[in-house]
Length: 412
Image 1 (spheres, rainbow, N blue to C red):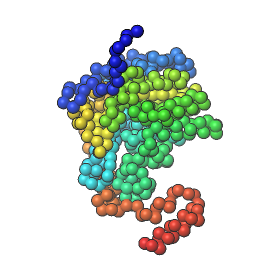
Image 2: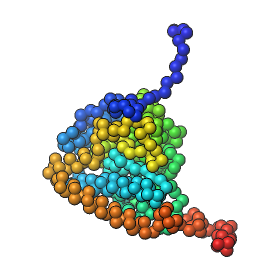
Image 3: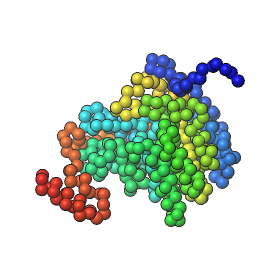
Image 4: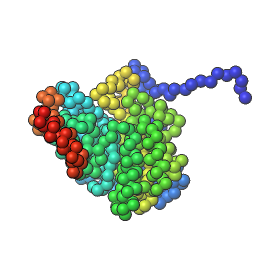
């Protein structure tokens, strides 16, 4: 025993701060195709290594390799690429609108597009997704109207949620997109509960929930895993590890001590750690977990390793806590570039076609923005009527609210 040595309080520090060279030496990137692919019936105790390795399909040359290659037609890959390009273009347009004072707040998902897009295109239309913010790619991949999304961002007179949500907290039940919750962590317990209800009813639909790595430190995360494993809920529990929870480095949530996927091991839940900037790996891992859930084999936890290239939100200044060029040094690259290069390597795409795609998407997003702005923005105050606070809450409005509504109308 060592006597007289003072104890030290440890605070995890990011490897680089503003003005320093970006340092991702803590990220171990194994060769593409090196992670094994177990059968879906494999006992979780026999696949713990997948919580620490990294599932990758695309190599540096854009070629697909290894046991996780998903069977995808060229049209499916093109659809994924187009949805990712549109998501990034949409983000850029909405950021510009916020800077112009047309909305109060916005959050981009730059660098993370493959996760939401691939997840949306792989799961069934009737499955239910419990998103966090930065999952707008799901709506775009499922062809939810851009004008609908933009009107919600503007909280204007056509906003189907009547301005009750923050601008980026979408809701679209028609495409399996549950209302975004601002209280982080609720998505997991909601997804598990919905999946349990589906199993109780003998339904065939599964659920999927998504949180950031910082949220794994919340109690709701651990409560959800407990219920998921106890009742073997048909659910996919996704952790998007984009390295930063607002201005807090992922080490504050425990990422320096172990992987976030490894938190599933103690619950007896299979865990996958996946290259979230590899579109093919996203499709393959989602497909594997969904097959497990549909076969009554229970939940799966997936950690998606990615990087938040943009600011946390329009209220955030990342230059105060990380190197300005950190995104350029991210070892897993840009998901759009990687899928584009894969299609070119297959002979199914070209740089000229990609330029045409970007131009076409830009025109479509611009036209949608003009249409959405015609219904009002924060600049002109054309917001939902105050009377809308009484709508969409009760199927049959109770008498006391009817009286209050009449009173408000009389006073106006």
